[in-house]
Image (cartoon, rainbow, N blue to C red; front, side):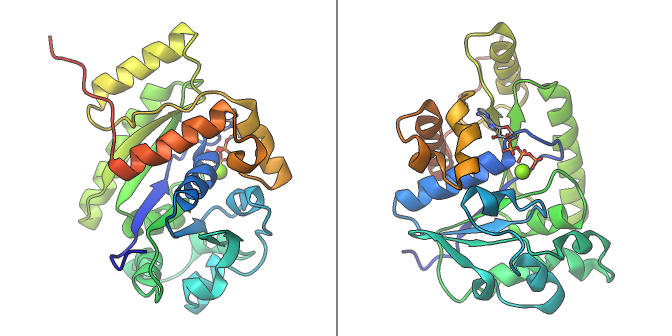
Length: 260
Ligand SMILES: Nc1ncnc2c1ncn2[C@@H]1O[C@H](COP(=O)(O)OP(=O)(O)OP(=O)(O)O)[C@@H](O)[C@H]1O
Ligand SMILES: [Mg+2]
């Protein structure tokens, strides 16, 4: 285990249902299975990150970090070997209405710097919104990973999100590394192939190498409180997320297409 500060990843996209939680769960577990110490933070009041691991999202958790200054480790629950998770807690929705000044945005960042125990990775699942919870995630992270589903008007939404992020970061005087993650990919159909091609063109050096294919095991596993590595270790979903965790670890991206 390293004595460096942990590398923090957030899965962010204000659009719902693009694979933020599926990616948080399976990337966190893939990293733990590879021998890294991982802390998961379920920053979505829906508590799907916790539920997908078979934990109860309504146990006290991140809400007490925000309102009472409780330490993250005090609310971290053992989830798997080398993987601990802080659930959202029942009062997390109230954070969006929290009173106070600019410091409100830095609560999570401060809690992470006060962690007494070393972790290699912190994986944060964000809600599909752009309020104070998302700001806290942004101020606490090294890397922003934006999942885009090939089923949607991916490009338009993503370009907007990228612009908003840059503006917010300028205002806050921070900068993160930004990555695009292609989810719900079906390489057999023309549209997804085109969308992925466009993404490479518009976001050179930022599209993570492995796309996540559409795979039923990924959709079914959370119902059993299992990650895809437990539910169907031989599935394409397990293969893709294992490869993606390596991409993230090594910052492996698609090469930009040759100019001209
Ligand atoms: N690659 C995939 N193949 C099949 N189903 C998937 C895949 N990725 C995600 N899903 C399913 O799509 C739905 C939305 O995924 P998920 O919950 O991860 O998205 P989200 O971005 O976290 O959504 P929200 O914005 O509501 O938090 C879920 O039912 C999930 O099981
Ligand atoms: Mg989610």
